[in-house]
Image (cartoon, rainbow, N blue to C red; front, side, top):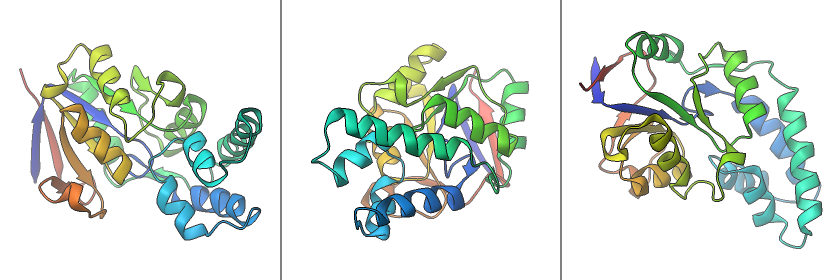
Amino acid sequence: MDEIEAAGFLFDMDGTLVDSTAVVESVWTAFGHRPGIDPAALLAYAHGRQAIDTVSHFLPGLSEGERADLVRQLVAEEVGRTEGIVEIPGAVAMLEALVAAGAPVAVVTSAPRELAIARMRAAGIPVPAVVVAAEDVERGKPDPQGYLRAAALLGVPIGDCVVFEDAEAGLAAAVASGARAVVVGQHTSATTADLTRLPDWTRMRALLSR
């Protein structure tokens, strides 16, 4: 059993608490086919990032209005597709235990709030009082702004928080924030070399620092 102690617990959503892989890959692969973008390159870049940043990266010639319209269409499609969305094993029980212990908990996601809430509810994930979503920050991951905002809202110094992430952009944001970063899943890079890793939540016990 892995025990992780902190004063505040900050979680990414997709890939960390919620497995929405099938929906994400379907929607973004279909998007990539239209302008002829390589699906593998698109998905590799998009994971952990805001939709607007991904669209801007691959379609830089669009106007601001065109980008915004396209992102609204993509998000609306994702919100309406919750079939097959499940928890990362053990996530529900782990979060319920944290809430029962009175631990400060936040979700920091690159998804818009509506999409984040829809996916957490579809997977049975308890929705914490603090959710920092795409519209709550000026700069998305890998910028640390979201995690810094979440820690401030919880009233916990970021250095006393632990961040759980599965993707490169989010892990970079976590490390840059000054929090302790923990990898959930199999992502491996130079960023993850010295970080604690959890395959899922089934053998993890969170302890609240007092």
